Length: 223
Ligand code: DC
Image (cartoon, rainbow, N blue to C red; front, top):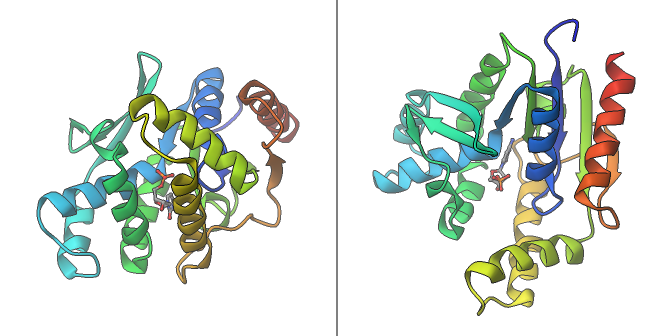
């Protein structure tokens, strides 16, 4: 590759964003920055320190976090100040807290700056909600993944049912519709497709098909 490139992959929960971003980063052999993990990490640390959202303390906490990412054993590991928090940030409680934290505009500014810095010296795949619109409006490649609410909930249901057979599809669909609504309707950097992003509807596609679609978009844009 000629220069450092930024591949922005945005979209709501349940569209296969993480799996697709992971395989694309692996294939290109470049860093994967999972920005949702950054919001989750702030939420986790704030919760553990009993710090509320919308306080000066949470901004101070966020400023003092140093994030790094490393693909290891077929996983993207998230380190916060050197601690591997990958598993700790994947609970339903942290998901809910992170959605709230992500509404805080001042906090977003702090994390956006850190996201831009992470991509200063290397090529990256960056996944999130506002990468193509706010973090890297000039990204070399912008992808927006979408799917119907039912398909997204079905995917999440399959994933969660393995851990907890008592989960219901309806409750997952309801939680997902609510989270998407909150992410799309919030005042600060709402989830939306950048005008120049390539949208891929993943509803009727396998992950492999989506990955190969994304790779061919990248090839067209970069060559
Ligand atoms: O992708 P995720 O579920 O790990 O994201 C956690 C929360 O953070 C979710 O509510 C969306 C929000 N988020 C955001 O507002 N902006 C980003 N760039 C990434 C995630």
